[in-house]
Amino acid sequence: MFFKTLTEHFEKLEATTSRLAMMDILVHLFRETPPNLMDKVVYLTLGEVYPPYVGLEIGLADKLVLRAISLATGIQDSRVEQEYKTLGDSGLVAEKLLSTRRKAALFSQPLTVEKVYSTFEKMCRISGEGAQDTKIKLFAGLLTDATPKEAKYLSRIASGRLRLGVAEMTILDALAIAYGGSRELRDIIERAYNITSDIGLIAKALAEGGVDAIKSIRITVGRPIKPQLAERLSSLNEILGKLNGKCIAEYKYDGLRIQAHISDGTVLLFSRRQENITKQFPDIVEVLRKCLKAREAILDGEAVPVDPNTGELLPFQVVAQRRRKYDIDRYAEEIPVTLFLFDILYLDGIDLTVKPYLERKKVLETVIEETDRVKLAQYIISGNIEEIENFFHKAIQDGTEGLICKSILPDSIYEAGKRGWQWIKWKRSYRSEMVDTVDLVAVGAFAGRGKRAGTYGALLMAVYNPEKDRFETICKLGSGFTDEDLARLPEIFKPYLISHKHPRVESNMEADYWFIPAIVAEVIGDEITLSPMHTCGFGIIRPKSGLAIRFPRLIRFREDKRPEDATTTAEIVEMYRMQLKTIEEETSIDTTS
Ligand code: ATP
Image 1: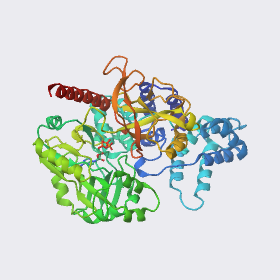
Image 2: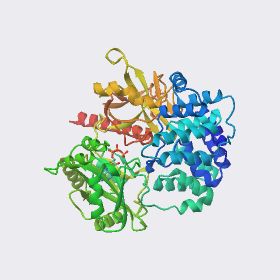
Image 3: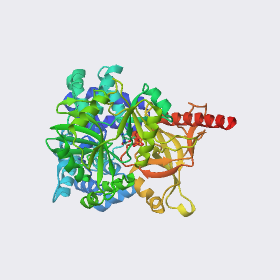
Image 4: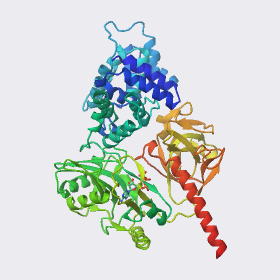
């Protein structure tokens, strides 16, 4: 397959803001792609070479891309750098300078997808001394054979900035259409993706072996499963109502979600967004190796920092420090973490995700030998409100955030990648003001004035609407930043800066700066209000009005979340309705007392 075919589709994708149009372009691309290349085409469309959990990226810094351009064109470094200063995008520099070449190299061959991909693969795998030079040479080799258009996209992929705005969910939709179009097929494809976290693998299996091949994809140790997520409700009454009167009420630990994959004593740890974080927790790896009474397993849990002297649970922020790349051993000693396991998804060849929760719990309890560092999450099984309330108070006293109430019905399977009503979190009694934080995506910014001149005065924040695959604005966030945070904002957002509103962003406001939706922040506010200025849930509660957060404050940036993991529009609408209900209840109590 010629690389040109791919870049022609990239150009069309780049030119559209409509999700439906994107889907049509992708369907067309997939139909043009030979089945054995489907995985490669999908990875490249996402600007990747491997699925993210593999942790291998080309990662050629802009400066090195410029050197390769200079090598391939014979144009001096200084001139290439000058162009970069004007254009601000190594892709545009490559396109412009390659088009000034008098003629293509003498023996150049049209680039193929196979050639591009295998070169990128090599570039990902090179390490050690002289790696950088070899990478530059390999890349310059590709540029030599490329047309200016191809060079633009090659440079963007190499520097990790393809930015076509294509979401994974849009690719799944397009795959379903290209191979049959039924709702059932879409669900099967999504499930396969959620249990493998590898969209290329799914695309290739579908292209080569159809639905049967997708259905036969199994959970595998080493490939992260997308985590099941929880809904929220304001009262225990409602929670029990949803869960048919009885549930497992489990401590809600405040730490870092970890999925542990163990096979014959080899342990891999994955984060909530399927990054390989094994190296950051050598102590957990060590104990997990010993505490499993089986050969292979996939376990789900939350790692929480503990005070080494008292054994008390410490706030989450402490474990965030462990995510730093340096001094890991020292941190492991100073701030030990305990992994609280609550679920098991796989054991010695058996897929447990399709079993009900109580059954999974039983298996977990028989195969894990608890130690100080690996424990089972505390829970009770109950349908008695008073008993669960008492357990909730104990949970708070023990330093957790509250409870997660989980279904024990026969259909309580592990819903990988889904936020559903099987698991419902219950933090504190929700009063009329917001007590729970939300996770929002930065989509733009406003220039700072006065003390904040030179940095951003506020960020434009958005929620995610998965039905529309759009980010809808909900507030301007200007509080809760330290002076240090503030000064660093332009630097943090530099890689995501774009000249126009991102196609997946819905905004009624004109920001001074626009970003690719990438960075997620946890935010608390005073309450949710109606606002015509914001697009979150526009028209759902009232015509011509969206929802906004009043007095939002930053709690922390959430590096463990992708933009699609942000709080959804539906959740905000639900929170707003809860708020109204609580206000009504409070007022009715007031009038009777
Ligand atoms: P989410 O992960 O649901 O998007 P979040 O990271 O903002 O949200 P919360 O909404 O407060 O966190 O709660 C859900 C998270 O709680 C889970 O993702 C998991 O990391 C954590 N957790 C702690 N204890 C448990 C438990 N017993 N069962 C399931 N999850 C738990």
